[in-house]
Amino acid sequence: AQKITQTQPGMFVQEKEAVTLDCTYDTSDQSYGLFWYKQPSSGEMIFLIYQGSYDEQNATEGRYSLNFQKARKSANLVISASQLGDSAMYFCAMREEGNSGGSNYKLTFGKGTLLTVNP
Amino acid sequence: DTEVTQTPKHLVMGMTNKKSLKCEQHMGHRAMYWYKQKAKKPPELMFVYSYEKLSINESVPSRFSPECPNSSLLNLHLHALQPEDSALYLCASSYGQLLNYGYTFGSGTRLTVV
Image 1: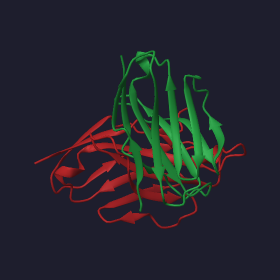
Image 2: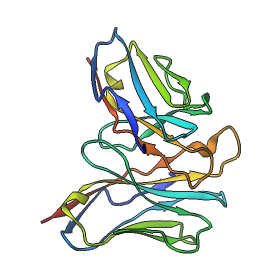
Image 3: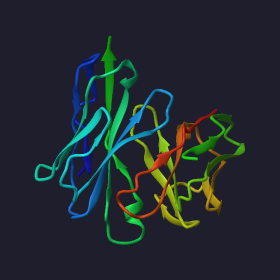
Image 4: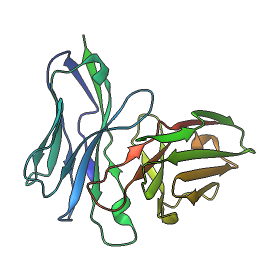
């Protein structure tokens, strides 16, 4: 089973509007971390936002917020006031506590959502 | 310094060549990673080094050989690669095992094997 599922291969949004990118995850660990990364066409992976499994408040970083619904195992990214520079691939990722052998070093990615912001 | 620096940015190599990818960070991170990313796919973990020791090898073919000379440097030695190994190779680092430590990624090396 996939650990991270992003069901939207592509999304379109008008400049200055808000957009939500979906992410659901699967884990049996009690302790885990959820991340969103942005990857422009240049290739670099840019960290956007983090949510811990024990965090009670939804994470926010500037125009980015994470809608964390633990019981539903979802961690959707909300981008407010979209800008043309937001056009990129967006990846949801998870680190789990794991058992041993360094498994909690692993950052597992979803397949990504390609966001296009239209002027 | 909050960057992970990868060199070269682009590399074209023949199937009989030997080349190396380099990665450097000066953030005091003690875990370093190599990821491989094919076009329109998510990154796939190849290797993890923790405190300069190989912690995870995701069953990567031996034509890829990682090396961690010190806590700031990570190399990936390439030998007898195949055209299907052409991809973006991303290096990353993190403070360590705590879950809230995300990765800082480099901008990658675009490798083409001819």
